Image (cartoon, rainbow, N blue to C red; front, side, top):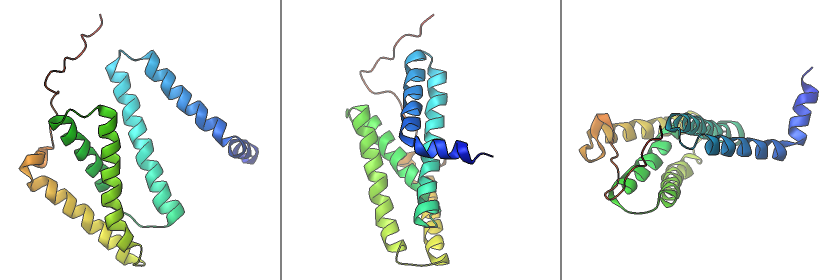
Length: 162
């Protein structure tokens, strides 16, 4: 019953992807002053990104990677530390955070790809636990409470619209 619908989505995948990007940009433009809506949209996009990463790892590559959230955390902590202590523009900080997560992920997953079966899963679980423990005992990165990012010196937030 749904095969024709699925077929039409497969045939028009690029059009559908473009429509989704256009819809997200339209929402961002329309709600540019409403920070709560932008927070919700950003949260949804982060979940979509994490889900796509899991789909690539489990679905296409067949790699049992249980440390995906840890790599996400590496990128997030890199971006937070750079944002707090440097004057690098925000978009460059995001790219650097992504590159750092990719670098750490590659350093761990390249040896994991040589293992088979349960060993690969055990290595990624061990990395996830080590990363969590490292963050909890590291006071520079906020300890168990996490890193609190304050605004940059010299930055003034725009006044809320009434």
